[in-house]
Image (tube, rainbow, N blue to C red; front, side):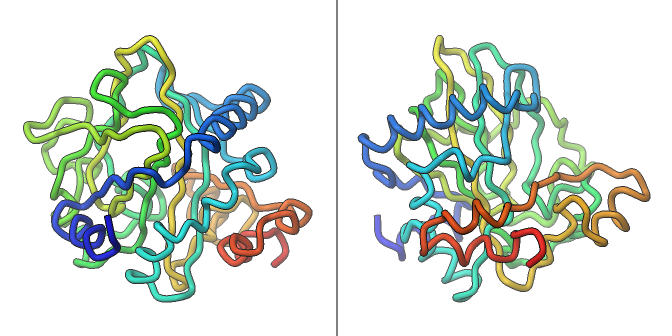
Length: 266
């Protein structure tokens, strides 16, 4: 699938699954890294049976080069220009029999979070989300629920628009693909964690890309923006730990520009 085809799918459907983004030899190594870091960090449960970890950059060396994968960066540059940043990096494991998640759109469109773009949204993307499939994503193991075309609406179910947060939606479908695929989507797209009905784990890396002008400091603990918008009023918001200088120095040369803004003290 070439860049023009990917961009067309993103424009019309709000998502695109690109197969073969990671070769099989690296998929196995990355899977081992994710399982190790999740076990070491005592990862937080989002829903029952769904765990995440965020301070992972020094624990996933086999995955690091893919953060600047040309398959993704070409799309990000088309949307945002040359100065692209990463706003979120995390690993996720969904165990068999997990709880289904709620319908939402990613930051900054989630209306339940402290820092959100108020609805109705302008018709332009502010963030490109990606889910890297480190195991097969299938209908059985619960590839992410999505509502195709929902990125074209001006709100999402977290805005109280009458769509039940935990109920099936008539046009929902799974985002599926073989291990090594990357699921790209407009962050406005309605999506939800699906129930894993298989006997094996569903494993992924989640990475989000933003333009240089989008202020992400509200996500970093200790910043003035977070104190003002999150801590003082006591509102919920994602928390993304800063990158330690020594970890930043070990990043691949192509990846460093994506995290320069997130190094503590920079």
